[in-house]
Each structure stands twice: as structure tokens, then as C-alpha cells.
Length: 362
Length: 272
Image (cartoon, rainbow over all chains, first blue to last red; front, top):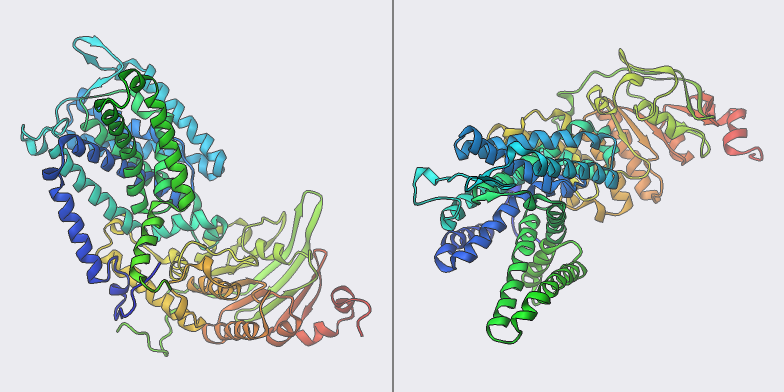
């Protein structure tokens, strides 16, 4: 990474800042202004997609703390999202807990469940641990599908889906988070900012360093005084806390939830997010979440445009297009990784370096 | 205020007390293989103590036993009042014991600074909430430990690479960073496994100078494994010779050098 020269720090505080240069701060302010103005520029459907991206980003940051930073592979992401979503929903439906409290409680409950399923990490590493977390995925999915008390009723008959009561922001009935995309947008943006700040700070301190040390050389970390068991379980708990938060947000963003959103495919999609975005990076998790969430939407809208302009028939649209879309999706992910195996984050920093050094490439 | 004067001695604060290291008849078996056979040694405080011997003699196994990574089936290793055989490895830094490995085991994706800051891990007291906020006391603690780490960076003359990613550094520099990471623990006993392997003469001289410095200035006990006889005979106070898991000689370098058993086992029968 190219580093700007001519910056002389006189205190450790300034040397340890996240954004030491004025240019970086201006960029940050511009980015925030862009985010605040976005809903006034784009359509409701596009705001809905951005909302999904932000929820996924919170979940992906959580997963990246576990997989990218601490090196503990987890296939249980979908399950932990489900725990968060159902914990939040059930608290709201059966215990009339206010949605804000239910959301935070859901995150803590998921952190506890995650820590529980993280216990095998003391003895299991790599793929073996992945299989252990797969058990979490199966157990939770099974409970959600089979356990009747958590089924909801819609229009008087029992269904697998859980109907979610309204959640009003600041008690204002105009700001119903379940379907008012703009209200949800600003709410989830604030949550995302808090999560990003917390996660970035975590890796400026001994907690984060211990996580990375466990990933890079666990025996050396232990010899340096890191209690492997404690920090591995803590990584599971912190990661699951954020994943549970993302699950809870999914609930509040919906009118009903069901098991389909928390399957093993979701786990794999989240792994794809952090790999495409950049393992061991907070910004990478956000880029990856945007890539994996937005790409299918773009492909879908291209398909619809083709049908509307009579380039393909309705028949083709229904039978062929889904497969073409999925194929394109896969090919784009592979291309992405061939171009830059370290993910979008690295690609972006390469582009920035190119222009920073232009016209002298070194 | 931001700069440590060179007369400051930050290592004198917060350090656990120094003790002699007493290895009492330890034996280590791997299945049917006897890797260490009733080894007894005493390392006095602030000594440079070298362990030599042919490949496979059990030198690294002995360090691993001291480091609590291996558990000898028999015997005790006393550091002060504590039997290291019964202590979990992550507790050792709190007793003042640090280790640098033979095959560099740094955290290769972290910067030099972060590697050294990990050495301060055991002294960090802030809770998770303070860490997430990184405000006030949490930030002050990081800065306080950054000062100590900068002192180690100055000592080892690695100022220019403090923000470099460790994996991108040369072998010689990585060895130096690994010594720095162990020093950041502010230990009283440091275990060095072949600190000079694969280095050129100049790098070896530097490393020897650092080892002598930390003993003279910090008063650290150094236990090292090394194959370069010139260095070993030059800087050590005591030398122990292992062969096939047995201790065949221990004493001052000049005595060990002239010990016929050592000449036979280590330097070869034909040696003149």
C-alpha cells in the first residue's frame, strides 16, 4: 500500500489515529453526506436493496471477526442468524418486549449460543471445526422447522412462518420499520456505523491482536500469554453477537420470518461475502456484502429489461433465465477472485495506489 | 514527555522477580523413544546459558519442557516456587518466561509493532467495553505500552520497519523481531532457540551484541541453543552438552571445550 509521505507524528496518539490525513477525513465526511442523501435520490426498491446490504454487512463483519481474523472456520452463520431473528421475533410476539430491547436481547442470546458452539474449537481446527459448526446449522434449522411453539399464525391458521408485529421508530407510526424503507435505512445505518467503529477499535487493542495471533500462530500466541480457549470462545461470542444483531434486524425489517432465510446456503453466501470482499478486513466484509447482495438484483433487473423490450420471450424468462443468472453470478465470483485473490478490499486499495502514484508507477 | 530518555529503564517496572531455573531429573518419552533422560541443570539468574549438542540430541525438547509445551513424565522444573511442569503454557509469561522459536513463529500478517504489542498482552487490563470504545483509559493503556515497545524497537534498531508487515521482512530481520517480541514481555528468563541460525557474520555479531546487552542492562537470564561454536564459547557463562537425550557435560566454556567426552560426541572422534 502506498503511504503518503511528509506526515510527521509527534505523539503516539496521532500516530495511532485511524485517519491521520486531512484528505482521508474529507473523504469520510463526503461518504457520510452521500449516505445521508441517498434515499432522496434513488427509488424505494433500491433503498430496500441497500438496507439488505447493510444488514448483511453487519452479519459479514461478525463472520469475518471469527473466520477472517481469528481463523476459526464456521458453517453455522445461517443458524446464528436464525437464532438472532427468532429470538427477536419470539420476544416481540410472545413476551411483548419492545422491539429495541428484543433486538439487543437477541444479540446477547446469539452470543451465548455461538460461544456454546465455539467450545469444540479448543480441540478442533480448520475443516474439522467447520464440520462441528455444521452441526450447529443442522440443529438450529431442525428446531426452527420442527418445534411447533415457535410457529406463528397468519390469518387464524398455523404456519411455519412467524408473523412480526410492527416496530415503530421513536414510537412514530409513520416510521414503521417493517416496511418503511427510508426509516429503516437511517436506523440500520446508525447501527452499522456503531458496529464498524466497535469492530475497528477492537482490532486496535489487545483483544483483536490476540485474535489475529491465534490465526497466524496459535502456539506462539499461547507462549506469549494468550489464553487460547478464552479468546477462541470470546471470538465466537463477539462474532455471534453481531450475527445475532443482523438476524434481529432481518426480523424487524420483515412482516414475517421463516426458516428459508437461515439455511446452509445462507452460511455459504456469507462465507462468499467475506472471501470476495477480503478476509480479515472490516471494509472487506462491507464490500463483499454489497457484491453478493446487489449482483443478483442487477442480474434480475437485466433479465426484466430483456423481457420488457421483447428481446426474450416470457417462456425463456421463466425457464432459462434463472439458470443463466445463477451461472453468471458464479462466473463473476470466480473472475473476481482470479483478478484479486485477496478480495475487493485489495482491488480497491490497488486502484487507489495506482492513482496516488500516477504517473510514476513506483 | 513523549520520548523516553535513554537513561530511563522501563523494564524495571512491573517485572516479576528473577529466580534461578532448576531442572530436576526430568525425563521425556515419546512412545518408546526417550527424548530426555534424567536431565538435571541449574541456571543462575542473569547467566547466559548455552545448550549444545548434535541434531536430535533433545535440545529443543528441553526448551519445550521449560516452556510447558511438552510435559516430562518424570522430574520437576522449578522457577522460584513454581513447578513449570504443572503450569499451563499461557501462564508462563506471567512468571517472567519468554521464548523465541527456531523456525520463526511470528504473526506474519501483523505489523512489527503489533507483534511487539502482543508481547504486552499480559499487562493489558482494559475490559472489552473499553476496548470497543477505545476512549480514555483504554486508549491511554495502549499508548503506555506503545512506549515500552518503542524502547525495545530502539534497543534492537528496527525503527525503520516498525510498520512493515512481518511476513515481508528478510529472515535476519524476522529473527530480530522475534527477539523483540519476547523482550516486550519484559521477561526475567528468555529461551532462545538458535537465534543465529542462517545469519551472516554481521547479523550474528549484531544478535550476539543484543543478547549481551539484554543480559547486562536488563539482567535477564538467557538460555540459548546455538550451533555456532565461536559464538557459544564467546558469550556463554555456562555450557551444557546433550547427546541422545543425555546430559554429557556442563560447565564453563573452556572446560567443556576440553572435555574428551564432548570432543568425542559433539566435535567428532577425529578432531585434533
